[in-house]
Length: 331
Image (cartoon, rainbow, N blue to C red; front, side, top):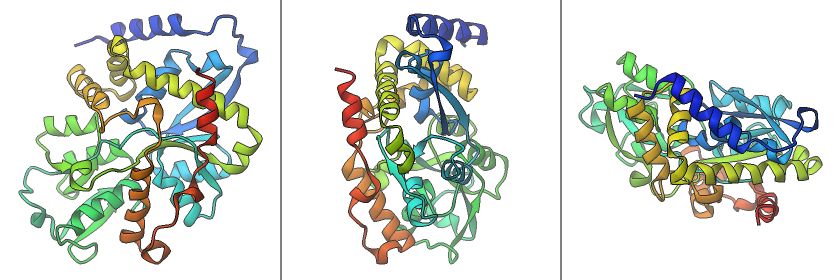
């Protein structure tokens, strides 16, 4: 197992290698970014540790949120500039909170699996049980509802939802008590759950198909006044993704998963492998999956009955022009 001292040494070496030459602290613009303590955001953690953003004149002030409610409300209030999490939260902000939010990048599939406690042998065994979720009407809770609906189980008739918080909290609840019979988990907590005897009933991507999960989104008014800054941030973010996907940086990625997410070496290595898996882990260059996003809208329309059950055109929630301009900064 890699020691904490060894992890620190690896990250320090990475930081020294990538620090922007000549960039003075007083010249950096601070961006307040909020995300979850999850492997999906390993490129962001890696980039902050390696001073990637500083090369483009940005200091990232990173906050880890306990749940999506805190993230959404903080972004709407202006406590944060950029949110990096499941983009269905942006749809919820637009439709439910009437906040003018816009999605500017892709990220990953969420890498979710439907996990149950050891005593649950089939989906039918979930009748009368509680399914733990973050927010009951967004993102991965909708995935769980759809998986259960497809197997004949309906909310409030056959099972109930128990809002708990982010993946880390849901993992702890699943392991600790039979009061939480099932939940959606992604790495590294999906691997940690297996070590604790929990069982996977399948990946969401296998059970449901394509899904655009992670991405960066911002208030549209903030983006209109900070276009250049946002595009420099996106360019740096893409550099972080490239760095994370480069096999030469495997040890740094494993190390940052261990240190940031407090995982042992085995779980960190398994998580790294999942992040590198084509079509499941990190999207190259944080590209946006339009078909996956249409699936997000269709899922919300079906499960929540939004828009009268007919999903709208995706354009309402997107401004990928910032991403396109950011990519030109990398050429």
